[in-house]
Length: 249
Ligand code: PEP
Image (cartoon, rainbow, N blue to C red; front, side, top):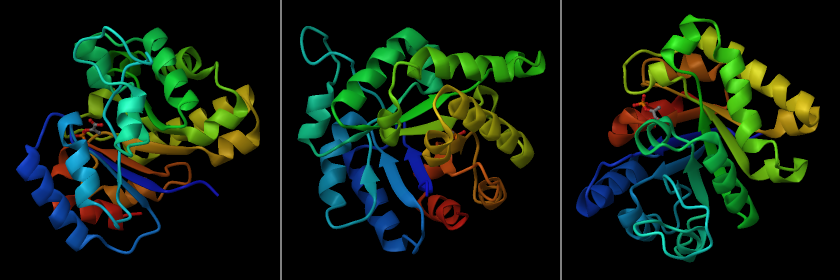
């Protein structure tokens, strides 16, 4: 059975002290849930987050990483650096990385390949822009994003992949895909994977929805059969909101 997951992407938010405070608050409020809970603080606070969460079921992820083993890549972070901190989950392909830092499918394919080879779990983000949805190209766009970045993976590697469908028009905008729109796309994604691999791979991969998930809409979105949880931005920065979202699973 595939995992239910709620992951918080903290983006470029929270100082060291704020990270520790938010994690303390979250740990104290964490409900019993069938969902795996993941938080992704900024790189510089990963070590502190790991220390703060010792003995907790909350897992820590990085928000990005480089594809190379090591070398002259000023300012970059390698898989081994993350693993040396005990961080074995990485978010790749977030729309902000694509839009502001020029990350394209070809680069993401290399990053995913490295993460998988290093034994890491990858939360792979993708999703269409508003114009693409308006012009009815959303299925085509999503299919090509998946194909371009993930088609080199063998069936076994998919055990390390978590997908996050995040329509760009719903990220940080307050506008959410309707539960029906999310279900429709998630079912399409699962069908695409079944076609490219087989139904076992498709049935076992967790597909998260991301885009303005809030305490008020989480449960309805998560109730859809192909929605296995959420990748949460803004609402993951407030412990009580994140906890309410986790309770929505
Ligand atoms: C995100 O950035 O992955 C995201 C879903 O953000 P928000 O929840 O703020 O829309």
